[in-house]
Length: 242
Image 1 (cartoon, one colour):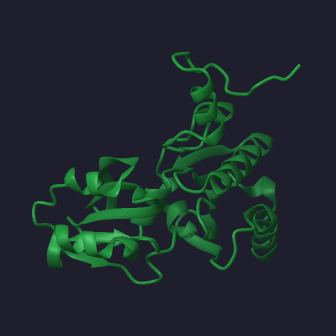
Image 2: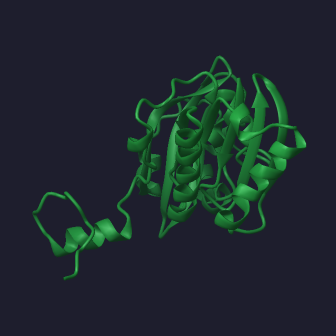
């Protein structure tokens, strides 16, 4: 199976092309967030380097959030457009689980962390089972102190993953002591190659048009709509101006 995988959910942009378990090409950038400008040129460059055309692809795997609103939209819109126009399969994987794929120590817990400001985070808790991170506490947007209160590590090693994890080093060490491990700079970055390998074994989405990002919190437009329409059911938060 020839697979294109991509993640632009945060500052990092990572793309890979795979043929079954063979990684044909991959590229990761970390120095800018101009994902809308760079994503498709990078995809095109990698496809050219491995002598493939879009019609050769059979599946696209995308990290579909949480993370940056703009970054998630770019990735999911690109993946949906490619899947629909090429008539190929589409698979979405949590951006947090994508980071957790970097850890392989069997039985360990993995806590990917994205800083959402004001002591809020996007996080989830995963356990490595048969070499794969299995979600045991669902991804969420939450206050970090409340998040830690929910976790019983049962004295297992906890890997804090992500470039934002060191922002919470003191709280993590107070909670887990010497059982918390902060990963190195490479494992703190999402790797599209690992995303693609993992996504080959998942079932594709049934309705490409209905596929949406995992924001895990209201967008500003939704929040504004709810504030202006208290008690009303959200059917559409797009205001029409006559």
